[in-house]
Length: 149
Image: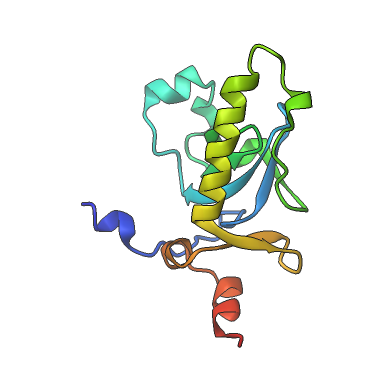
């Protein structure tokens, strides 16, 4: 079973966003970089109910590393793709009570960025995934980069 999790996952046509894309939540405004996706929600009914997402269960979901340092699992229906690299929140944008926790989350998220991605590609408008993510979620745009000198 663990090996299935390592197998390449070709992207079905209904998956709108790609690994490395920056998404923006239409209601809450936070942004995140895609580091994984699933064709439908892979979490249980309880999670869907708790997150008011039962109507979204059959649509694609994405793993996002967000600009507030949080890791989120999000519906395709609630997000749009945006341009530019991900900018983490500054301490000026964080309330005093949350500063220490969020600063810790952001430091951890920045480490994840270094772990999952090489750099931001302005020509692709997305982060370039590391070899593992590129193999796990293969796409033509990353294959072209591997073949260039």
